[in-house]
Image 1: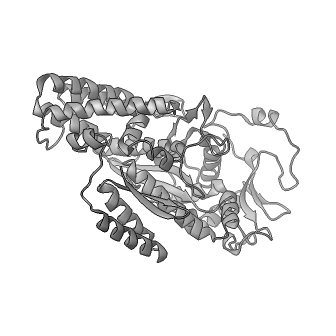
Image 2 (image 1 turned 30 degrees about the vertical axis):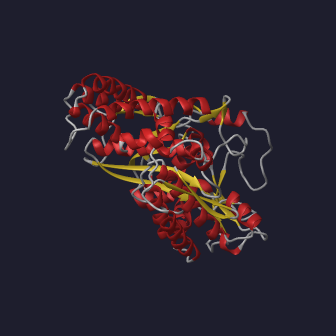
Image 3 (image 1 turned 180 degrees about the horizontal axis):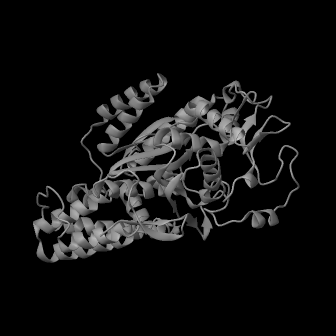
Length: 461
């Protein structure tokens, strides 16, 4: 069966084939890194973690790029509030993000560009747009994109320029020729820190949000690539503006497939920091083990809304235990590779090939678990574990998981304290990669570190 993906651009499910045979290039808009990630962010990164996993299972080589936005109004405000540099803030939050999502089994991307590392490419792109008459510099020094000069604006979101103009609530700002125009380069303000300022032909300033992703994706994947993804809230205006910038500059389609994951909802409201109804990944992991959280997210299709509640997480924990109970009934046999012609495996592949149907794939796992419970067949138990592994599930020892939720008491307290001291020294030396490695070493032994304002504590998961 051929992999089919829902393409937001065409609003239909289409057969997938990469532009370069055997090689998939995918760009996903990542975090604006000024605070801890919440469960909505985890849902986005989980969705595309599954996508890249399944593409690899399907035999493709995958170049997966997920960026970090490390220059932004919110970042500047937060750094000023805390009295630290922008880099100190974004390094701290990037480390925290890596630690949190690693617990959820989310694999790192192939490339993780930071916006501040690509400012020259952004400026070059703005120059191209200005040369083509698609950008202009306003009296206040900002450089704006002239939306009405780009034919086809609105094709991703389905919004026409007339509809957008009819929805205006404010008069044309003095620094824009049209209220629909958006900023490419922000002129520096006197009260902004020096590290938020770059020299340019347009005067000192910093990039706008939209131009950052256009520059980073083209620099890492080329002018045209296979998949561009992100949360549904980015479809407009962020991704629409990316298309206008990139395609306006190159004349080439930016991405063939556009993928958007659904929101996480709390009491029928989108989870977001602006609404104050969010739960950080760390808060959720204080109550639930990481595999339960992963399983909870994967039980919903990536494009559907995900309703967050303790009731749903409790149900997910009970369901996951049922799968581990099946594995505990028969020692999984060795499985060098999955035989995709086997009936359960064939069903699993068919639903995953239909726009990454994880709810249906989980249903296959439960049907297989029922058969393992009945037959106590080690080969089928091995298949259950292998298919679960495709989704990043069921890789722990069943008896250990059922007993303690995945905790391990392999480290004594002295060793834990020694590793914590090593991690603290690494953080003090700004060796965040080593600090991250130590945290993951402890996590693998079932020891969860919690960083707080008074220091770091630990507990067994």
